[in-house]
Image: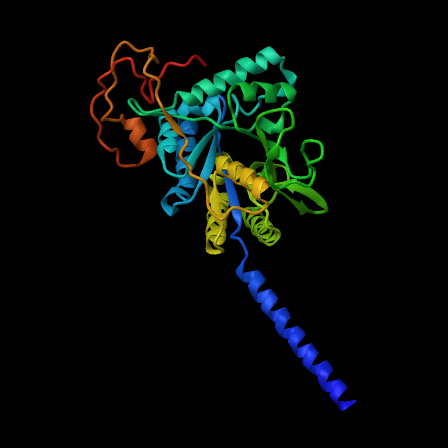
Length: 361
């Protein structure tokens, strides 16, 4: 009987050792969390000069937390913002780690209420305006992403995006707005019948309801302070990290570009960075989802963020005179607050420039 007791004790000790080893190995193999920061470059419709300046300053405040830290993020741009701050948007699109994506005409846009023809005209115009944000003699943005205003869209939207060779549509919310059979999906997934992926924005329970992670909605509809918003962000980050799911969150320049929400944004970036998070663009997240679907494992490497393509030599600008490429005006300098790298004067006067490209609005 004594031998039997010792045998039980020995077996228990061995089991405990294996349990500790398993836990240790499991924690050592954890994949760093994945965060997709979506920055909405917002501005009021027909903004005043002051509102336009604030919009540019707010965008810089937010990307200053991304680019200098070698992180990645996607900026979603409306036609209104391009019209107000074309040079600022163009500059952002040249920065390493920054992806530019379409975000419609303005904040009041409702695609589902439009005819298919009007939708196509609207989305083509958005694509054209963002496509035209390039430096004289430089490359175009290779536009692969879109998110509709107020998550409002329909089947016609998918057909048009497919024609535009857009790779993903971020007009979805995990567990709230989803394609059939994808209620529980937090990773991007294929939209059946179309050649593009759905990207769900993350959600989190708040006061017994599920809310999507969008600062403007959280501030204006849910009335949370900046400190409360930060608390929600960190809780969602920890939850996503444990579950091995990506965290997809939207920050608007109108909300997180200044004040206590900017402080919350900065603190969250630092918090997630300190936890070893991998910050990705929405396109990178989509590519990772494809790799995960193929292999069954979360990729350890972040895909390349290169998303520009050469200007077609046949393209013509609308101006009769060639702009000077090695200088910026006073307005541009105040917007960007950066050192401009000198370039040679344009040799081909048919080329477009960043702030003078003629696009009918």
